[in-house]
Image 1 (tube, one colour):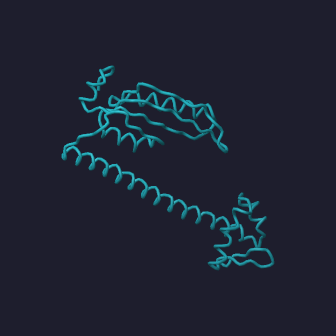
Image 2: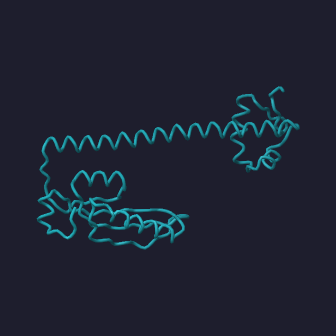
Length: 200
């Protein structure tokens, strides 16, 4: 993709004149500002993107984080690149400035749809993989927590505050685990003290 081509020549080649808004949220302020600028710089190294204008907002506090956005005006290699960019960068706003109309051959449109489907399937696979890993992590974490509780109760019955002090987890976070274990009859609460029902 050539830089500094006449606009008419770019349109003849099928390039697309676009405007995007990309937002980021993070902390600290200096980090999120640098991250966004580095990201735009990396985009500028893409041979299929010609960034012609950038406008950065000031970072604004949002809860414990800072939000910032950049408005980009750019020429994209073709409509396929625009769609791929939308999936990869997740802009909050997309505007096609030129051309005003698109004429696509059926073969080109089929290719575009196939690329789109490939992206969707890729994201779907990654999401399912991440969910499976999270479930496994949650299961392992729960098993480790139970082991800590059983080990602590080997010494005798203890209150939730005593368990909390030994295990190192605040009582309000420990309570849901204890409730589940009590429901599963693995432990019993007697006079505000827990005892293990596991026979050694």
